[in-house]
Structure formats: C-alpha cells, structure tokens
Length: 136
Image 1 (cartoon, helix red, strand yellow):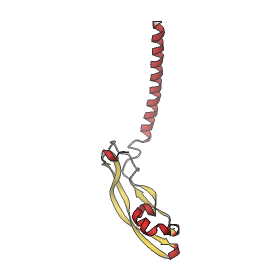
Image 2 (cartoon, helix red, strand yellow; image 1 turned 90 degrees about the vertical axis):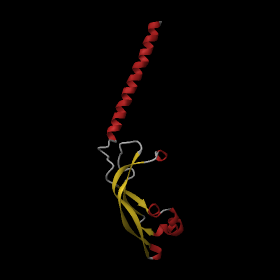
Image 3 (spheres, one colour; image 1 turned 90 degrees about the horizontal axis):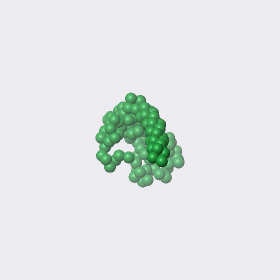
Image 4 (cartoon, rainbow, N blue to C red; image 1 turned 30 degrees about the horizontal axis):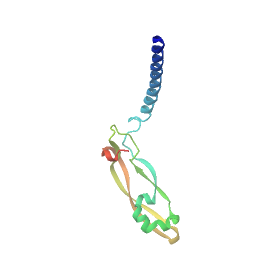
C-alpha cells in the first residue's frame, strides 16, 4: 500500500516536471521573440493617426467635428516611440528623446478651405523610467 502511494506521488511529480519543462520552453521562445536586440527602443515607428488624435479632443469638438466627413486627408502618418521598442527594466517605456514639429495641411472640401496643423513627429527614442501608477 505504501509503495502504491509512493508511485502515485512520483507520477504526479514527473507529470508536473514535464508540464513545467514544456512551459519553460514556451517562455524561452517568447523571450527570444521579444528580445531587446531584435526590438531596441531607438527608432520611432510609423503610425497612422487621425486628425482628432493630432489636434486633441477640445479643438476637435469645438471646431472640426461637424466637418469630419469633408476633411482630406482623413489621416496622416507620424512616427511614434510608444510601442516601438523594448526596454530592459519593467518600469521603463520607450519614449521620445527628440522630436520635430511638422506642418500638416488639410482641405475642408465643402468650404474650399485649407487648414494647417502643427504636430510632433518623434525622431529618436530612449527608455525612460515611468511611475508605478503608469505601469500597465
């Protein structure tokens, strides 16, 4: 009877070790896929952005929301650091270390009017420490 209990315990231990080994292999592969060397926080990546994101909610609501179907282009592409690379510490995020102000021109078709907006284009990124409250 005692031998049966020992065998059952050994079977559970062996099964647990196999599961842990398989999971560790998956974790190792995951770590390789997102390694710092493959995705360093350095170069901003292109991101499609809509006018509302560029000018902010207040100006959008106040001035341009009613014209949204008539504004061209609908979107633009700016370079962004957020989500563009990995940082070595849990409390760091990829943030802009240099930016350039760019002028974006849009057409309000129904009014035959051109409007111009300033936007920040990220030109270089670096890892920056963030507060614990901002960690997601």
